[in-house]
Image 1 (cartoon, rainbow, N blue to C red):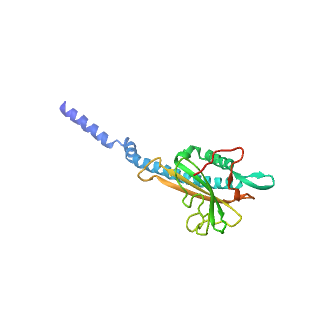
Image 2: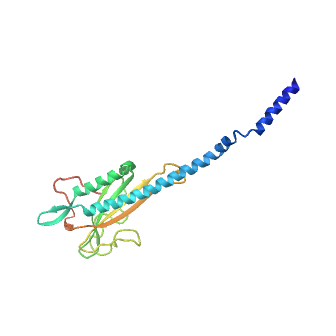
Image 3: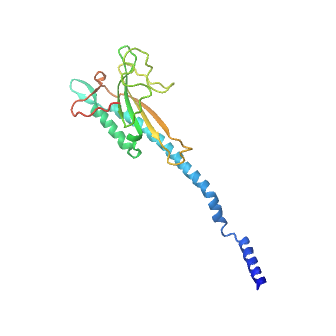
Length: 220
């Protein structure tokens, strides 16, 4: 009896050694963590790439819309109103409403013009977003006199304007926070710039007016 029991155990062990039915399960268990890291890392890279593109399109859209908006005036050049600024920012908010943009970012709209001496001048500036990010190139009133202010934009790509034109210069700032792997994809501040010449005549001397319908000024 004892010998039969030992023989039975030996046969069972031999069968288990020859059995390959669980190899796939074991291989999957070993490789799954690596596969998950690769999949989630790829998703994070794709998410970051899409975010860059969306913020770039947001900057272009705001600059384009601000360069077109105006209110005709009888007997004078059209003016740009606080209401127009509000409408431009409303359109921007609709395009990024899933990003919780007011909490994580800011859009800075500046009117780059020339001063009395022909120098570059940020005549006015308006902002949308609850964060406190400031323009990297200057605040409202920068370059009001003289010619020391070079213009707006990154070194090597500085935008300047000639009299009597104006450029709508837009800066988009957004705090990126990764969905996965915070140690690899660290939070970072994303910046996007865009600029458009004002399309038609506009009374630049008036700055941003606030006739009826009056709205709150989106100051910075």
